[in-house]
Image 1 (cartoon, rainbow, N blue to C red):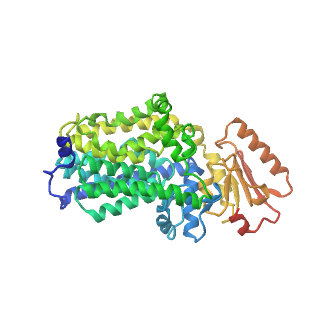
Image 2: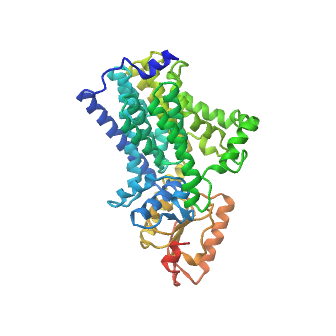
Image 3: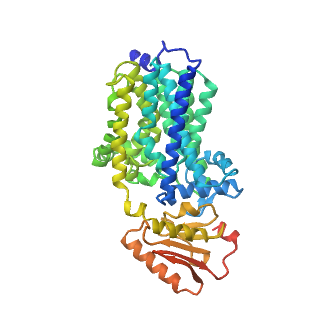
Length: 494
């Protein structure tokens, strides 16, 4: 254990007062280029209307409402955004909307913070005694890591901010900068209540493996305390008694957090049945293959911090948590790279030179990119005629008007008090409470029954004297309510 600790903590590390200017320049250019590419990719996806109500539209509406001084009660959920997840960080993000209220602000912020994670990865590598070129390669591998790339293009999620925050917290712990450590931990906790279990895991690792008493206790106690505060006080208060979102994915273990924990211990066969199921095994493979070159029993200890997040994903009945194309695995990423740094520093990895590290990362990038392209519906993404007609119809909708539309169109119109989408989990309002109804039947994310139901609804609207057709072309239909609508205050409090 002592040898493992020495390899990861590196008591004989290089001086930590800074890096040479050329390294700063290279790292800054690499991160800037990555941020630009990240933003370009997510912006193109948004332009092609492949982003969705959940979660870009949801967070765009919430942040817009906060920035405009209104209660962030999202119309798609019908309750306060803090009743969904205790994402206090959204109030800080809302300051950016004071300058420019647009979904691209969220996409840009996401691109920047994910790219910024390369800096602590590089510093951790250099502090561990790794030469500049391999350290730069590890930072580059971070920027090409599949979970980073897929999270970047999957709409927006506030937990992306936790990735560099957790990395910076590990760096601060290694450099014994206590105030900085506490601030980075606080930032990570503010992203989402479930990040607290990862923070607690980090605390356990720092306390038990690295023997860093202050940092370990702060993270362990702070993470557990915030989880209780967020899940038992903040979320129920703002969500009118709701449990944290996502708890329903563990319904086979219980209906409350305490029941889930208790039944996990009392009925281990239920847990085991999920762990050996094919989706869980496939998920484990997705996590392991990109980093298999740096997995070694003597340097794998940093992954202890990621055990809570990995367990939550493996035990969930929601397949999205085990998908490489979602954001649920982001809390794992910082500790994957702390583990990689430890392996390279201790010469326990397959690769220790820069070319080999980058070569493997590029190969994983190509494989992951191919898998992503294979899932893309090209017929929809490049239907320029339908895209043009949809954007024309969108331009005809008044600001702040109440809108009912389809899942993909929501993020194009979400900066308003009321916007809902067809066949959402929350039933939409009566039709007379909407100023506009916009639908693209060609590209809507609807199954056969939902498509049929939506067609029936559209026929009702078209036949109603309360609506008139504003636009109709290539399966794009925009209807405007011509009767008096309910007062805005009533709509906002719906």
